[in-house]
Image (cartoon, rainbow, N blue to C red):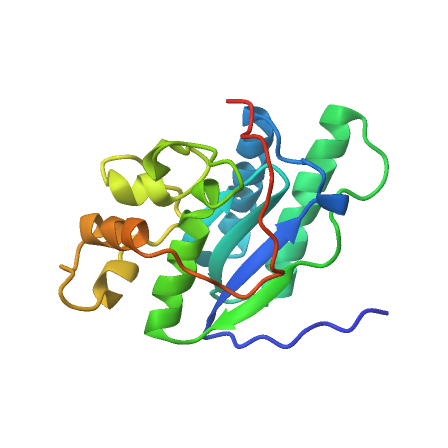
Length: 201
C-alpha cells in the first residue's frame, strides 16, 4: 500500500498533475471546464485556498493550501472526479494520470511570489507560446488578477500575493501582474520545456 505523504497544514504547496505519458487530457474547452468544475465541486465540502492556477493541455499547476482536510484527500477527490468525467466523455478505459501528483511546500513570501509567477507564465514558457499575452489565456488565474472585475471561483484568493510584493512595486494586483510579466521565474519540477498545442478554445 502506498504511504501517504506528510504535509504541513499551514503551508501552501505547488502541485503539478500530468497526463499519462504527457498525453493531452485537458485538450478542449469542455475538458478545462470539467477540471475547473471538479475543483469547485470538491471545494464546497473540503475548503481550500488557491493563489494561482494554470491548466495546460497535458498537465496543470496550482498553488494551494488545504484549510481543514489533508491535501492528499482534496487532490485525490479532484483527480478522481475529473478522471470519471473524462472516462465518460471519451469512453476511456484505464488511467489518465502519469503518476501521483508532484507537491512542493512553499514556505516563504518570496517563494509564493516566485511560484505563482512561474505558474502564471506557463502559457508563454512553452517552446511555442500559446498566447501573445498572458491575460489572453483563459485557463489560468492570471486574467482574474489582470481584471479584478471578472468573477473568480470561490477558492481563488486574490488578496494575499499583492501584499507580498517588494518595493518599488505597489501593493495591488496590477503591480502583481507587472511582477509576473517582468520576471521569468524558475520553480522546482522536472527540467522540461513543454512542446504543446494550445487547447481548442
